[in-house]
Amino acid sequence: MQAQQALQTIVIVGGGTAGWMTAAAFSRVLPQGHRVRLVESDAISTIGVGEATIPSIRAFNQLVDLDEDEFMRQTQATFKLGIEFVNWGKQGDSYIHGFGLIGRDQILAKFYQYWLKMYQLGEAPDLEHFSINTVAPRHHKFMRPPKDMPNSPLADISYAFHFDAGLYAKYLRGKAEKQGVQRTEGKIVDVVVRDADGFIESLVMENGERIEGDLFIDCSGLAGLLIEKTLNTGYEDWSHWLPADSAIAVPCASAGPLLPYTRSTSHTAGWQWRIPLQHRTGNGHVFSSKFMSADEAQAILMKNLDGEALAEPRHIRFTTGKRKKAWNKNCIAIGLAGGFMEPLESTSIHMVQTAIMRVISLFPDRGFNQVDIDTYNAQNDEEYQRIRDFLIMHYKLNEREGSAFWSYCKNMEVPIDVQERIDLYRSHGRIFRIGEELFADASWLQVMHGQGLRAESYHPLVDQRSKEDIAYFLDQVQKTIRKCVDVMPTHEEFIAATCKAM
Ligand SMILES: Cc1cc2nc3c(=O)[nH]c(=O)nc-3n(C[C@H](O)[C@H](O)[C@H](O)COP(=O)(O)OP(=O)(O)OC[C@H]3O[C@@H](n4cnc5c(N)ncnc54)[C@H](O)[C@@H]3O)c2cc1C
Image (cartoon, rainbow, N blue to C red; front, side, top):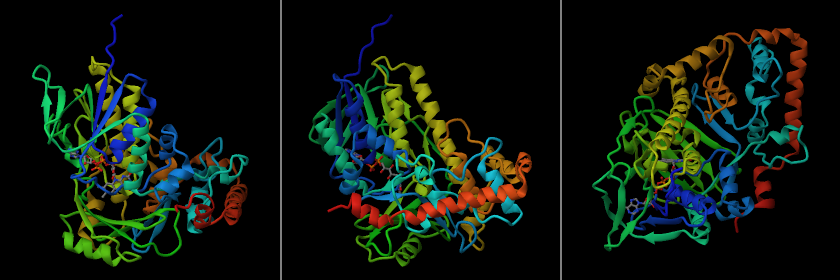
């Protein structure tokens, strides 16, 4: 057996959400003997957006041992049950993509197959009535799933958070530093690579200091300081499928009830997010510069704020896609340094988290085995592609009229897997999750149906039950969910009682 040479120093470059999430996780799970350092520059600001999450964030928060109420207070967080899509099908349409389950699956067929039959007959209301995660948000209700009611729809409540990105990074920094992470503030002006194999050897700081390491985690944001500017890894551009390349972000004062969901409203060349926090509302307009000028996009954003703007609007440019290799030599890119897909389904922070878990599961020694690196990259690519396809589905199925941008999206050729999913759903409403992809069939269903795609038939085995029996079953599910929502507190009441920021 070959003796292993353990890594000693891990250097994280960047102190945004990705950098501090990585530092907090590594310092919590890596055994003693590993030194974790983080380098960030106060002169280079973080991206400052990224405030909506999906339920997997709760597993990360548990991993780094955050108390949930304390975390909510520290980050001015609110709860999130899903995303409302406004004007994404036809103008005036609205649907919610809720986290969690829809109805009660049966042995022979999924719940939605029974619903599809009755819906096609015109004898069932819309899908949204059959999930607690879509009914509760329409009434601005929220509670955590109770542990002692396993058979109630309340137990199915699946939630994530909206939080202030700057406060989250600061909170994680506090944790990470207590766990021994050494932070260095300053600008990296050069990166030294070894002649022999091109591995990164050290960072050179503006003040001349050299920071050496065995493994470098590039969390330097869109710049990709190590993975691209140093190692020239290359980038796969997906903007022909996801043509938005710009965003303008601006916070505004809170107005109206505190909604337990993100809202995404489509505009003529993109869409606008609305993320409610305890102390303010985050807003942004994601658009394609090929179809709209930045001035026009900003005017649309400012016109559609529901409170007074609290800062100057910030402009961000990006190219949708990913690095050809997330792990190259002794450098692993996490966060925006590794790639970016627009925040339509709030997936980026989740991908930071899965990248961290993947590094832990394939944690190298100083030999840097190539098969580990290749496995990491293959898993990373698969994850990116599946999420990309889910995002493309939203655009491809739009039914908007009179906009060159939406017309381009409707008519674009999509990856074969996306077309197959559309065809499969259209024939008998069938949906299959591919491998370990993030989004389950309930998600694909809500988006495909919400965007206006209609199944022409349903699973034949559904006919084994009488129409009356199915109608009764659907009615019971719907009524039980409604009764549960009636007794839930409002989102605002729940926060006031458990985790209101001071
Ligand atoms: C418009 C937009 C909206 C988004 N919305 C969401 C969302 O709702 N949900 C979601 O999950 N994700 C969202 N994201 C993604 C999310 O913002 C990022 O994944 C997350 O913030 C992580 O960013 P980061 O840490 O990789 O990079 P950054 O926040 O950009 O951090 C980069 C760090 O690198 C440091 N750095 C860079 N160069 C140097 C240097 N030379 N020397 C020293 N330090 C350096 C900087 O100081 C900084 O600390 C959004 C992204 C965009 C662009």
